[in-house]
Length: 308
Image (cartoon, rainbow, N blue to C red; front, side, top):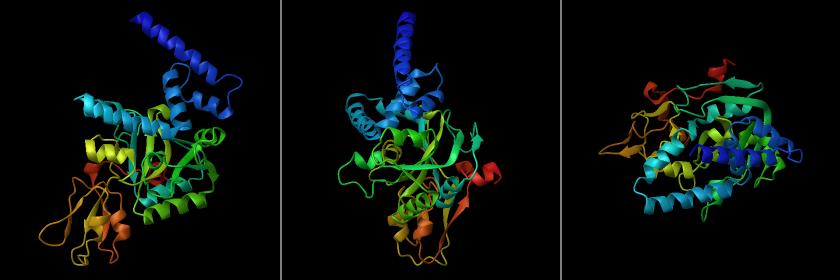
């Protein structure tokens, strides 16, 4: 067994050495530095994920279906694999905008109260003015996806340079103003905002996605299989019954089915509510607001965390 592990480590080291040789792109070398020489598998994992995200998501979708059919413990296996190594933190629109508006580098580590996972819970943003966008691999991997697809925001280095140099699908550099416009337009379309963290991306934050329940693989894993890939924003929706017109728009808007209609007006199921805030922006009379809920964890408010 030890010899097998040693051989595997050697082969991975050789593969990694090939990728970061003198002929490798500058962004590949910088990306490799996130993992160091002792974690070649994470580097190769991240390299494939960043360069061919559509194929990555497609393989996971197909693999999940096969496991569901063949393996009785497939959901438990997925929970163990994905919960701590690949996950998203739901953020309300204003907090997503604050991540984009950053004008200084940030280094925040071990944010257990904000990012309640064992791994990948650091926010280390180098060169925050460097922002890119790529096509959403989740939308590209399904039939009749939500459009537009060019809505996944990559934040900071070396991630932006990597997707640009490797021509990741739809990759282009954008300004802060354009990134903010994408966030606001996606919010209008009824899509939630999630800050994504991944072990293979250096154990930290690297992107803001704009997710729809019909296409997003992470949301489907969360809702359909109970895989805790998504963490609450730290808020819950509150409905002011006096101002509620009982129009039902909030029920149709909520992507987590957290607003229910009983015998009277709509009511929030606080156990289901993830605090995305879509119901707030869609409520015409302003009868819904977000309130802090300590049982849901701390918000990813970069302004509060950095005291900007």
